[in-house]
Length: 103
Image (cartoon, rainbow, N blue to C red; front, side, top):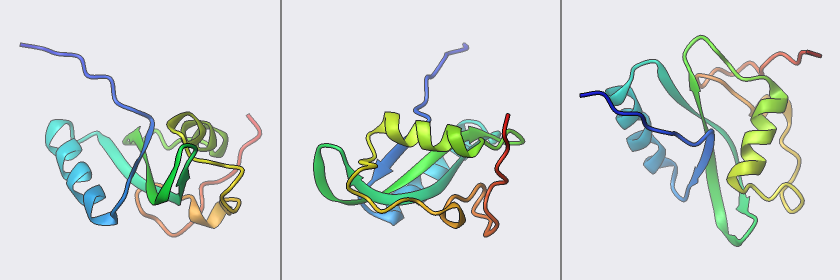
């Protein structure tokens, strides 16, 4: 049996420990689907500060603009959170920021 699952590009969790469970689940479903923490901040509907993560395919790291668009679509309140500096945008939990491209 084959099924199709639509995953969010970005999402939030209240506790960083929850992210570990999501990462483990994604690895078990498809080892090519990666989940990386990319920001912290509040949702547009308010609430406590949350951990924001990005879902992407291995070998296809998203560009900076794609990350910001995914976070906006997921509900990160960009106006009431401090700007996310490039050094906070990691892929695969690397410490180096994603290179900015003009394409």
